[in-house]
Image (cartoon, rainbow, N blue to C red; front, side, top):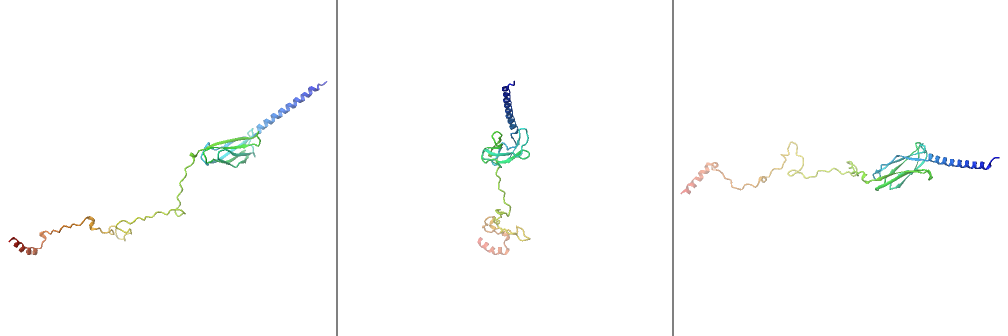
Length: 221
């Protein structure tokens, strides 16, 4: 006789083994097919306010194969920065990227990329940058407008008065500045001498001496 109880127990054991193998296979398949994120282009760790750049990630399977058409969600999870677009599908190489802009306030900005719809296959990676106002470029002085352009300042003209002693006009041809200079004043060398003029006797005419001779003799009497 065949022991049927023993045969039934064998079937139950086989079913248990099949279920266990199926569960392990599903777990292995999920892990191998679960998308993995790796960063290709990331920002610097310290940036200036309002700095910008690209955040590029690559999506691969557990076997290292690029996954095409996988939506990647980009978002800001800390700080006042921005990133766009928010959702990008991976290309044939499994890459997707977005443009980030740092905030204007000093502090930390964290940008994240996420793939997967459910909790068991969701993968997220993030990069954090520190905004430092000391790295901001100095403000440049405004350039001067071109001559003739609206708002341009006309060149300054010499409106100084002509030099003393002249009218400032060009002297006529054939003359020099010395010829056209104003005559010098006799008082320029000092006050005039008011002492009487002394005429020496040698310069007195002979007829005048003869007229003075009788007067001189009479004075001696």
